[in-house]
Length: 290
Image: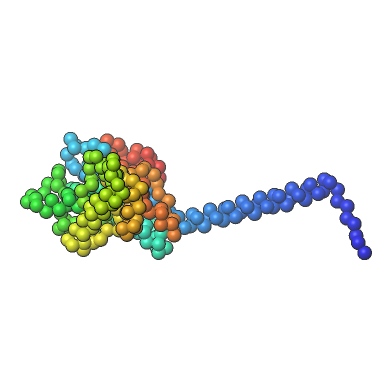
């Protein structure tokens, strides 16, 4: 026996609409759940980029800041709930699923100026902060020949770096040995007419020289590479990864999304350069750090 069901056209349309809305609802719910999972597995991490720290006002510029202003930055970050972490903490978060604080922030200091020991380390100790310092191998090697280092122009030598490592407030990155320049190569870029093999030979010899100097003199082997001036090329990026570095620092001004399992997010990390002649509040607002 067969039963014939007659459904009015309006009723059929209503049913189809209901089914469609249900499908949309399921899709929307899946999207929300995916977003929530992504949020749980990701952290927004601002990285601040400093260079030289000096008291002499005549030296202040886009890359030289006073110790007073640096201290104001650190105090602001603490008062707004930020906790400083090392880049190695990001590496462990991505690869080992270790914890990060709710509001992580990273302070980086490029070039290895001696005044980083004079003025920066005491502030890190005072406020229970930590920072990442990028070393230019040739600068530190030649610094060892100075009898009386000066905060105004000297660089960290191996003993200075060892003091900072011992403090447990500092980690170190490779900032090349002798490629920190704007000559015909311009940082880690290829020269005009240079072949890949020629570039590979020069680049690897340079960065491994700094690696070996730090290993031999400071018993540390950086897993972080900092591109001078942020200048790089596809060949350099590939060689950095293939050489065993687990993270790299660029200069694009952006907040980084660090995601568990996503090793790519650790390379060419964005940083906000901290100039003089701008207040802490204005700088943080410019960087969208809240």
